[in-house]
Image (cartoon, rainbow, N blue to C red):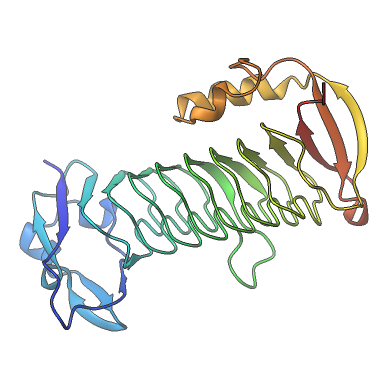
Length: 280
């Protein structure tokens, strides 16, 4: 039976922010329901038992935690998770899946800023939108995501995929400015409109624009029109992960056919790649 968590009815003194560090499947496995309810969370910076703020039911023995309701004021949900599954039936706050190394996080609503920041592995799926810095590096870090797959059905804010060094970020809607900023490696896919200054500072890796040519910085050089072999393989991988945009582009579900390639950022070595469908 999965562990079920639901917010208690709000009161006038309800906390504005709850930090969920440590409430992950591997931590609760083997604990009684009473022991799980005593696990501490930070409510407006003050430690409080989990059961003071949430209805706690079921058990954690099967590696599944269901978060039922509005978790938009709950931050760092699934942070550091290494195995198991967390399913949020509603929105979630900032830093969800930060530093996650395994398992699956599914969010049925929107996610806040810093979704999957510093992700190292696992799968993150968001049915709604996400804020700024999705799958990006944490402040002060020279590198960000190092593995895993992040699938967002909606749009995201600025700096999506900033300083990624491995992994895949797939965005079903549009994105704000600075997507793939200082990308070190890995792949960022955007099905909708790509915001300005995309790819700025790219060293390696790929930015794939499914809908139209992105607005690139001046230090990008037009390359050849060709059919990259890795794109159909990537489409199949993302389709298995639930990315609806895997069937976008001329009806070619495998992303085959011709793509226009750009090389950049030339000011950072010029080994990054940007792909979009060529103009007709």
